[in-house]
Length: 114
Ligand code: 5GP
Ligand code: ZN
Image (tube, rainbow, N blue to C red; front, side, top):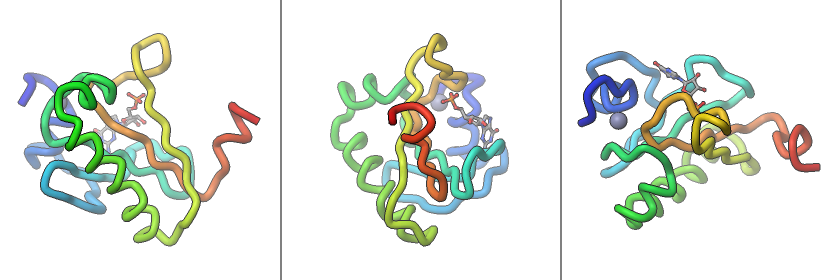
């Protein structure tokens, strides 16, 4: 566990979060400031600063995290969803514990990519 990492503290259940799913190596909880009808953060239990670092250090955990997204979207009642990995402060990353934003109920691609 990294000192002063808010997501490590959520994983350790030291600070509360609305947990929606848990797997052996991941935890998923609702974003405190939701930007879509479903806005869930899926994080590895292990501390890595971003998703690419996680994939390099623990590829099987990165794969588990990705697989979890579909299970969680299904659980939330959505077949279609967007995944966002903000990587680096210049790209809006504010919490430096790897996480993916799972967004459903709004087509985020229309905002940025279409
Ligand atoms: P980033 O900008 O780093 O990709 O996303 C961090 C996300 O974490 C933000 O969407 C923010 O709302 C969310 N967040 C920050 N602190 C907390 C917290 O204490 N609890 C929860 N559930 N979400 C948080
Ligand atoms: Zn952490």
